[in-house]
Amino acid sequence: MPPGAVMVFDSRKDARAASAGSILITRLMVRVAAGAVTDGGFRDSPEIAEMVFPTYHQRPSAPTNLTLHQALDINVPIGCGDVAVWPGDVLVGDREGVYVIPIYLADEMADEAVEMTAFEDFVIAEVKKGRSILGLYPPTEQQSKDDFSVWRKNHGR
Image (cartoon, rainbow, N blue to C red; front, side, top):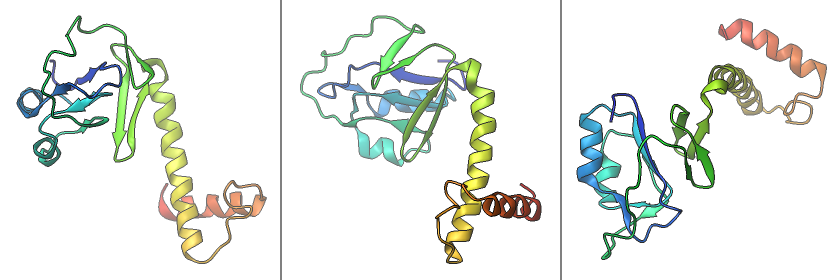
């Protein structure tokens, strides 16, 4: 596992047998991998949750059958959670889930995410002040667009 890579398991959305446990996840962490993702389950999920290492799974798995999944290949296109994952794709995860971004779209998506985050931060600030979301989100009124431009300038964003 090269440093900075994410281990993605295609478990066919089946958590009856674990995709990994705390030993394998610890090994990935020590090898400076960037994370692990499965559409199946992980054994030792309480221990894995305590690690300072990003992991995503469908649900905990404490199987009695350890041979339900077999490793067939590595570094090939797979399906994970009904999404195609190709070697080199960029994976972005947060507390709500994981997104798979084809490498050729990664820069464009990152730019768009920065823009959307700035706009949503502006909207949250306005709503906290008591402003209605009508015409603000989505910004269907010119005043909302103008206010956002001023906010961006004032906040260096």
